[in-house]
Every structure is written in structure tokens, then in C-alpha cells.
Amino acid sequence: MKKTILCIALLTIAFGESIFSQQIGRRARLGALLTDSIGCYVKTVVQGSSAEKIGLRDGDVLLSINSKAISNHIEAISLLSKMREGDSIFIEFSRDNKGKSISGKLGGVPYDSYDFADVVYDSFVYQEGFIRNILIKPKGEGRFPTLFFIPGYTCSSIDNMGEDHPYEKFILELVKNGIAVCKTEKPGMGDCVGTVSCEDADLYQELAVFQESYNQLHIYDFVDTNSIYIFGHSMGGVYAPLLDVNIQPKGIAVFGTVVRSWFEYFIEQMRVQRFIMGEDYLLNDSLFNTRASFYYNFMVEKKSPDELRKNSNFAQILTQHWNNSDSIYMSGRNYKFWQQLQDANIIMAWSKYGGEVLSMWGQGDFIAFSEYDHRLLAQIINNNPGKANFISIPDIDHGFVRVNGMEDAVSKFRDYKYRLENYNSDVAKNVIKWIKDRP
Image (tube, rainbow, N blue to C red; front, side, top):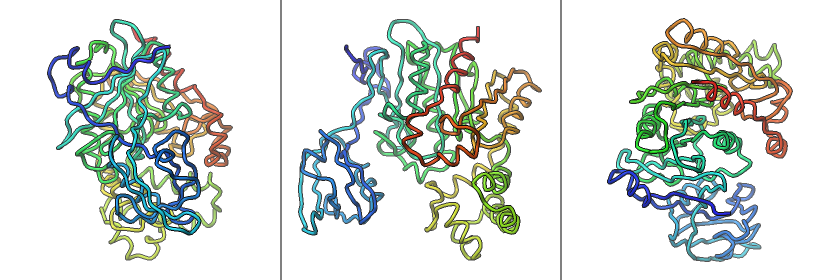
């Protein structure tokens, strides 16, 4: 069967001359699973990939890429992320304790394509470069209700996620039910070029990306501008009410998010989440004051990692809970990103939104663990002009995986095989029903 990808050249005809007729290159893909067991170790070479074609094998240890030394897979990925389809690559590596080198051309990441849908790869201007946005629409003519998708906080691409990714499954369920979906890369991810990196972007820079992408939806002739919805998962649910949009969404749906201040979230996290993860009650209680003081100094007093590390107890929290070992990055993001979340008045933003809301909470979600927050959101909307529904969904964790409560979710959190095989479609089903029930 024919698979359709609508590329930028076609958009020029459909929509006229605009920034959306600009082409950006496809990011390169080496096609090797890299780990750090002994340096930058090639665990698996994908069949038919660039890595296989230029001669890499399982078990090789990468030493440099284009004459730039690497010592771990993060450094390798950073270099590869800047390369485009057709770029030349020169790799020095060790095989069986012997130094070798190879060179060749890199292929590109495959485009998303489906038998049942059309895919539009587009882009828009941001800073000095371009952001990639991708729209997936049901086949056929006419205008479709459209869902604007905002993912969680992590720096990862939403392009070519793979058929097992829960976001991919969620999105395709909507498309199969007649709903178009727009997904947007974060700055520096995927095909994006000439922008700040996702890791360095602050809250407002990232919000600006989603805001600009949303505000361009009206240019697509298949988008029903009277039936645009926003879906925010996790951090995406925080972003949703903060967007300054030119077309009021017909509704906003969230799953697994935070509504109160982030200082409150982190304080509660130190109790609720640590207990669920098995921390001893007495140990937790003995550490609570120190942890609370850490979050006050970090979120409210706005102290940097360097300042916090002067306190040995705080230094331990930075290492154990935030994966921090430098002056900038905490859990993969610029530390200012987290501090800015504290200044974003999420409750106030929701109170100003007059549309409909679907607030969903998973009973197995030990990350966005607060049922109260999700009920509070519905209450905020229903106390103002607007209509909200709260739904508590059993047997689902933060990542759309079927589990039997929070403790079970913790036990299966790193069970990759289980997670692949136990996707729970209840969030998608609730969103689809909610959209179809809207007149």
C-alpha cells in the first residue's frame, strides 16, 4: 500500500509563500546502540544502517568522531546530533584492542509514514533557525478536529519514535478515530537547526516554541479551527494554560501533571514518592527538614547548583536526586528551567482559561502522584466560566503502562520488555470520547 508523506515543496503550493515553505535538512542517523560499559561501547549495530554500511560492528569502542575525542555515549550523541543526512563521517575506534578507523556518508532518520494517514513535515522560524513540526492527519479531504500534543519535560525527539513508543500509540489511536495531531520538536531536537539546545533552553524559550507552533495551525486547510484541542502530558499539562494563543482551544486535556506550585510538588514528592519507592519511614522523617531546606533554597531563594553544593547535605541531594555534577544541568535541564517553574502561577493561568478541561489522573502514577492536584484543576475550571471533568483511571502509570497501583508501577519502572508489551490505551480512549462528545 502507498504511504504518503507531504513534504515542504507541496506545502508551498497549498499555502503560498511563507516561512513554512522553507526546507530544513534531515538529521543523520548512525544506527548503533551506544552504551558506556567500557568507554563509548557499540552494543548493537542496526541492520541496514549507516553504521553497518561503513563497517562498525557490535563490540567496537568509539574513540573519536571527525577527529573529536569522545569518552562516553553522551559525547558521541552530542556530535552526531549536529550532523545531517549526507554528511561525511570519520570514526576512530578500537576493535579487539587494536586501533582502527573508517569513513563514509551518513543516512537520514526515516520519515514517519502510515498506510492510514498523511504526514506533513513542516518547519517554522525560531531564534536564528528553524523548529520542526509534524502533522499527522486522517486520509481524505475536509477539515478535521485537531489535537495539539505537548509532551513531558525530557529532551527527546518526537519524530520517528517507533511503533512501541507510548506517545506513538496514543497519537495513532487518535488519528485512526478521525482526529489530526500536531507534534512539535523541542529546540535543538530532531531536525531543528540554529536554535538553543533543549538542555540549555529555559522555560520561556521552550514555551515560545509550542506557542508559535500552535499559532500556525490555522494555515493548514485540513485543520478545523473551530475544533482545536490541546493535550498536555506531564510537563505538557503545565505548559498548556501558559500558552498565549491566537485561537482559543475548544478544550484542554491533561494527564499526569502538576497544578500547585513546584515547591509544593517537590516537598510532597519527598514524602509520598520516597515512601512508595520503599524508603524507610524513620529515615525519611530524619531527612525531611534537610530536603525541605534544599528545595526552599533552590526553588524560592533561587540558589545555583554551585551555591547549593557548598552545603554537604545539599550536595548529596544534587547527586542522588538530580543527577547533577556540574554548574548548570539538573536532571538533564538547565537549573533555571526548574526555578522558573516556581514563578509560573499555574493556578492563576488555569483560572483565566474559560474553555473545557479534561483532567485525568492515573492511579498507578507515582511521578505525578497527586490525585488532589487533578481534582483541584477541575474545581478551578468549574468555579469560573468553563466546564471540567475529572477522571481517575485505574491500572495505569505515568508512562501509559498497565500496572496494578503505584507500588507495582515502581517495580516495573525499569522493566523495558514489560513496558513495551503492556501499553494502556485508556488515556487515548478518554480523550477520543471527550473530543467526539463535544458538539
